[in-house]
Image (tube, rainbow, N blue to C red; front, top):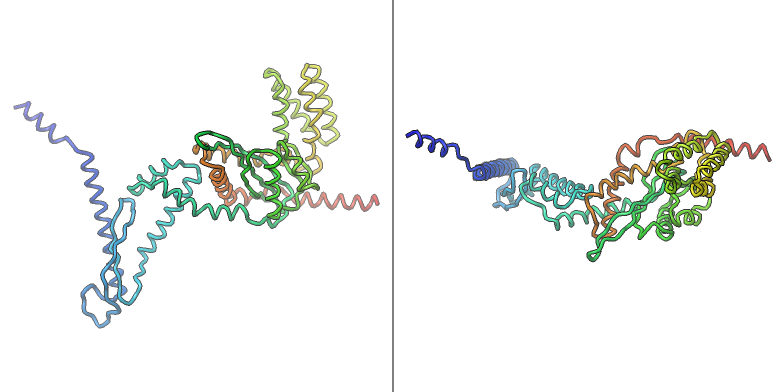
Length: 406
């Protein structure tokens, strides 16, 4: 008897969770469907100024049946019975609300993909939210809608002077015919005459060589980039030569951080910290003359440590890192390195890492451009980065000095 009671209790507490979940899902969907259709009927009654089948002298219209449409809700797919009227077009706030919601869903799917969320994750998110998966084909079609907007933004005119321009590139992976190869994306940002940062451009380059940089600079110049006083870049292959072709009057500042890395590449690990301290001391000098004197002293010390290759690199290229001394003192910390752009490039790398290998260079370009477009619309571009009045004052002082000398 005791055994039978135990068996009965076991039977009582057994729960078919899947069946209950399915039943609850159907119940919720049924309730949502019934509520929405009730709202649609009420809206039709209001437009007709009479209920269905009601005879009323004040009636403004009569019904002409209905049509069905599917709607994805958080409870799953429901069927709406949308009333049709004989004299009026049935327009309801309910339908418009869901039209806006469907549009926002499309935008959310596009943003998820362009933000670097994998297609598989997008499918899982849509299933969790709306009970149905969005296919990779649907995501691809939605992306095509936004690509046109991104292209328009990428090719917009540059209608302001930009005294300081930062250039850099990022190498991404692409999958082609079963093989993985590299694709370069070149990026330019700048500081305008009012001291605010701007995303200037982004282009695909086969690689970071002279041809790639020339095409990018031509793209920027054709869109109206002008008033450039200084380019801040790494010593990329062919870049400096290309700058001379398109912006011969602008100066070039080699990023001191990239320069340090180049020198430290020929220094033993045990001496890297000491040499890095010496290099920083050079650029901590008060003026150009002091910096050049300090550089000579560092080279002499490195030769004494038998680091002749490091000393040679400094002697040959240190002058490329001193250009910033020709600009206002308050600007120097921010124009002697490419850090302003490096932070953005790190964000792009973080966003693209989840994609892995892109199907083609255009997909890589679109994702990077979308991220830059997002950054441009944030507080990043609304905070004053430099006081450009100092540059104008410096120009006035130089002009007056020339007049006095003449």
